[in-house]
Length: 144
Image 1 (cartoon, helix red, strand yellow):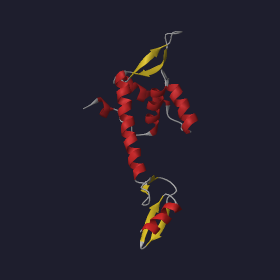
Image 2: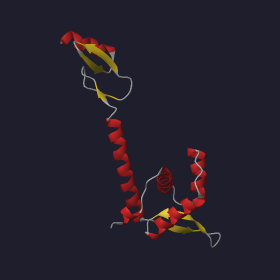
Image 3: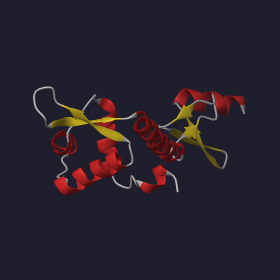
Image 4: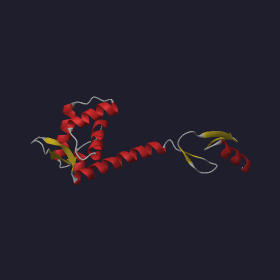
């Protein structure tokens, strides 16, 4: 079993923790909890967050950053293996978003441009066709 399959990223709390780990040199569990609350208005269980960090550390994806001022840990940072793991998670997430977006995309039959929002539809003959604008619809009607 690969290390990636041992850690499941099945909710947004874990995903966001990975985003935060990737975005800063070193972060603490407390920082993750604060950012979840301020950015996402989500109260996460400290135990849940710290258990997730512990599992990442156990698999070598993060390591503790030592504070120069005290013997306490200053937080965690991604290891090389952790960076690879996070990139793979982000790639899978990106693929899910892409599939979701593609299902909402339309193509203008007039000019061929891909449209996500503000689709102009026109019934020509007995078919409802998608256009990016009324000008493409008018040109299409004239040329066909």
